[in-house]
Amino acid sequence: MSGMPHESDVQVGGDVRVTQGPFADFTGPVLAIDHARGRVQLTVDILGHVTRIDIPLSDARAV
Image 1 (cartoon, one colour):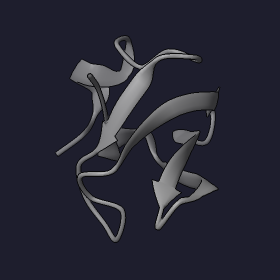
Image 2 (spheres, one colour):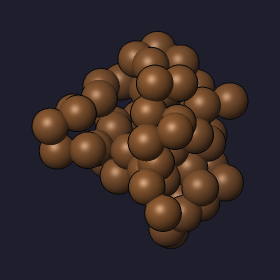
Image 3 (cartoon, one colour):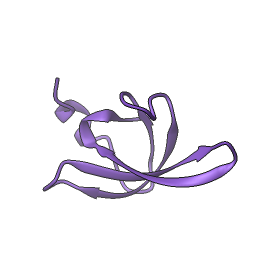
């Protein structure tokens, strides 16, 4: 299933929830969106450490 219905809701600076993969259910602010590659970069808190991750845009849902 494609993330296209949510694509317009995901914005730089906005918070998203990761819906699939190893970071499922993590939330964090969006740093960058690469529409050409269909990827989004965000930061998540993992055990007290802020970590930058790059995930498919289809796996990100605006909160």
